[in-house]
Length: 185
Image (cartoon, rainbow, N blue to C red; front, side, top):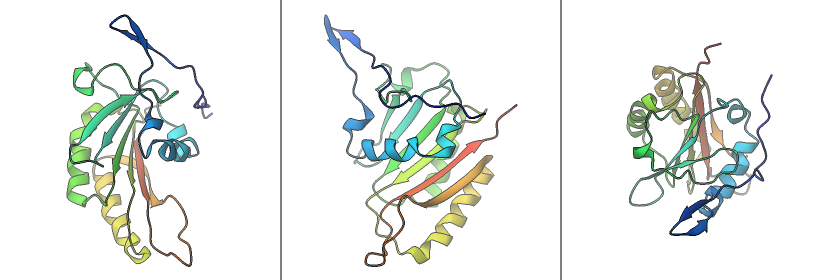
């Protein structure tokens, strides 16, 4: 039985800073946020994520890599920095990039993230935007990534463009790579 994920309209949280009530930032406020959330809400693997746990978003779209933690039910920023969370057990990790990530960099990221991801069904998504890839290169990219993910012990690997290429514009602009750890039933 697949657990239903509450819609984006889940109750928002707030924190008090300097005597003022503050609503934490939402992932939707980032340039890619709304599109990413839309893709994930339709994604069958994302719906299988462990019921307990937060979402770590690693943003490689700027000069400096940033890491933020979000609540998966309302996509609000968690009030602690990733480095301040004791024993992180992320249900999902999402890596966002504005270019194609080389295989060796993906392997390094997975190796670094593996101890922080829930080993009982935790998931990894790589969302790459702003691409100009000829579809003929997709099988090679898929094979490289499938090897990396299976070597790391991830299953349910899936790779492909987020939208079907058009005949007038055959270039691939966005890719989504995903997999998860085996669930211990």
